[in-house]
Image (cartoon, rainbow, N blue to C red; front, side):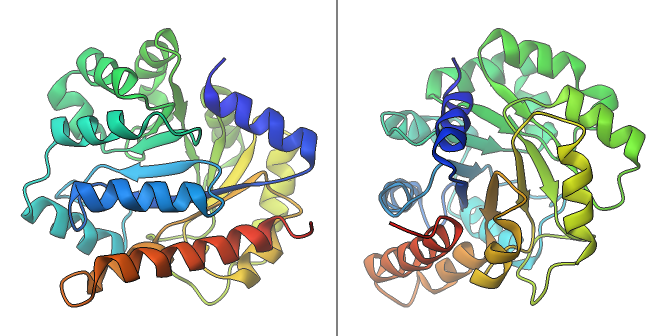
Amino acid sequence: MNPIDILFQKLRSQGRKAFMPFVTAGDPDLSATARLVEELARRGASLIEIGFPYSDPIADGPVIQASYTRALAKGVRLDSIFSCIRELAGTTTPLVGMTSYTLVYRRGPDAFLTQAQAAGLSGLIVPDLPVEEADELARLAAARNLKLIQLVTPTTPHDRAKRIAASSSGFLYVVSVVGITGERDLLPEQLLSQLRWLRSQTDLPICVGFGVSKAEHVQMLRDVVDGVIVASALVRRLEQASTRPLGDIIREIGDVAQGLAETLNPGP
């Protein structure tokens, strides 16, 4: 069974939710990425998303875009990312890659997925692959026991959202806001009604990302989702890596992550 399925089965049996932080591969370098993944796993991460830097941002806000730019400037490349992930795959925390389909296409879907499987990834998120064109990649991924996690946005029509949910595997990634990634003061109230409707349409775990950055957001979502995804609120702190000790920054990111994880799953 895929580690993502095992994770959500376990969490549901315990009445708990998945805390899912995001890190950029190679910012400020791949050694730091490995340290950060290990810190997040220790601080309560249920699953960790690893972003594959790409020069043409898809839905990334300024924080993630700048992080990708820093990683690319340091020379991070696809093969080195897979090597880094392979070294981390011994952790019990499932790892999911977030990548542009351009990177998949350039390497070749078969070759990319074979490397992803060999590296120990449990799934992929490919935000710029529309559901209408996802069948082949989903088939190739399933043959390798990889999940292809797809996205629903606030503007996705109901009939298309049903198709996305039927095509997705692992979990359904719900984008909380219209627009790009980044920290927000408030999440839209209509998000809750969308999540309740989606719950009636699929048995997949439902996880929310984009804009989730503080305890109030987690408190708003925790009773209606299976997991929350946090990116910019963590990645933003890596901007200081050139001027502050990296160990201090990683600990601070760990502190923020642990606080959000404990808010998501309060109690003993």
